[in-house]
Length: 282
Image (cartoon, rainbow, N blue to C red):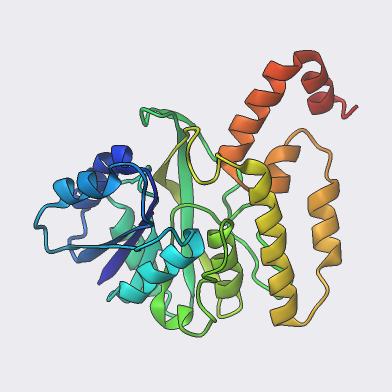
């Protein structure tokens, strides 16, 4: 069985789209775990109304706001499936997403994670463009997902997850990056070269509300990987920090929502300075 994991905080207004994409899956052997992190809006009421008495959905909530790491850790703990994947409540998946993921896992029993590609969408979920960095990755002890090659949609075997220390409940951001790095330490990855995920861009998502902090948490994740692997990743971090090509923001942060919003803000603030920085690095 496939467990779809949804950690929600104040995104109830978008959940109907997510829900409809899940129940439209061509593979019907799934469950959905929804954990609300003590939302301050009407998410709990909205989500409960949408899923109603559908036994395929398990709905839980934190009694106090605990953060993204804690909530995603709880999602995994509540899951009964052999294959797991996170879907953000403001995003959607393609109808064939679960079927293709399950097939890849079945035909590749030695892999820990299967990843695909995704579309950038606007707030109305209208496709804008495709992410251009998803690709097959070579897993070794220096893997830090430097170019964000591993991204949405990604699923993993629970048996491989259990070989790790699990999702760090103290992380506020970069939770998925931490998971990818940990899973890379248990087995190789497999890439499905097609977009299976619609990534909604809006200004209140967890990745966009405080984008500068997201990079800080990503660096913390890399430091934790150093400790586990007992190696020095200084060269990789230096490359992450010092790149100066036209895709600087995307490469440095490995976060597509931040890329679009941050570039938009910088352009509005000073178009001339932005264009010089972008194209001539001055």
